[in-house]
Image (cartoon, rainbow, N blue to C red; front, side, top):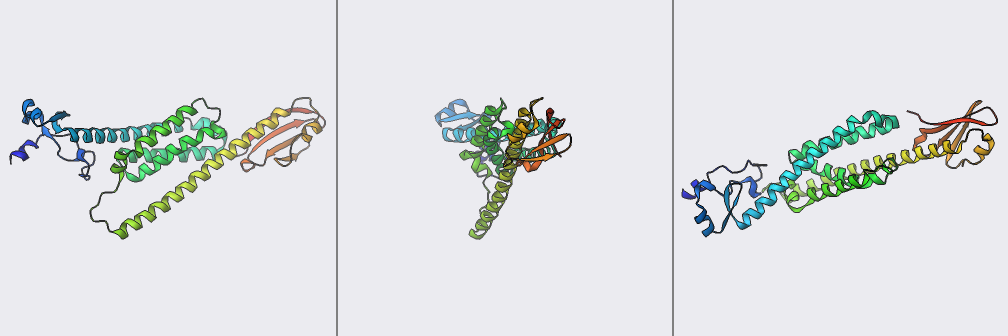
Amino acid sequence: MGRQDERSGMALKKFQPERPDLLINTDWGISKEQLSTEDAKIRGMKLFHKRWVIKEEKKQLREEYSTYHSIRIIGYLLIVFTLSVFINIGEISKEGIISTALAAIYGFVMLAAGIGLIKFNRFARNIAVFVFLSFLVLPFMPLLGDDKGSPFIMLLGVIGLYYLLRRTARKIFAPFSKENTDTTKHTGFVVRKAIYAVLSLFAIFAIYIMYDMGQAKRMAADACTRAIQGMPLEDFLSAISEKDYKIIKRSDYVMIVPKRGMGRNHCAVSHDGRKIAGSKAGFND
């Protein structure tokens, strides 16, 4: 009974009461008021959040405590990123409906991952890992190639992956069940792999579309840059590769359409029949 009384003091609020395999989620330690400093030192105990614990317990508790908090911080960070995406959706919409849709989907994915991480949801961790992996790839895409914040995005990707994949974090997100059979584990493994495969394909497809559209935008801008006012139209057209562009001729303008980016980017070159009067890059929604 004395031992039970010693541990009856209030400990920290449990992050996951259903996970007693993690020390932080148990009634660990002895309340400071229930054990004198002298007795604690004799037992080789140390204080952690006003409770006496042994040295090994303190190390474990500190690691688990910091890991739980870092996961929550990452969750809130992803929610902030989501807000930044939707705040700038008007600017993003200038790139066209596809870019806007991809940005919105990306935002909702980050929002779901952020909310899930705050609740220590395992599936949310998997989504968040995907998001932070994309942070390492996006800076190399044309859409972000000139962004001065790209190194910061990559740094966030590395930090996010570190805190989500470190040993204690993996244990926090690992399923806890003493009654799992080998069949259940195998079925769960197959289902998880299938989900990861689908998400991977979706991510690769989305990144490829963003890359392809970025390339098309640059190609259209390059064509417009070559279309110098007063330049003979035929000279300009002869310099345009029909392998990379589709040339659509009209009575008073020529449409130069890059064959990349699903044909949505273009450069409209106006003319008087002989010489170029002007040019303007555009996007067809």
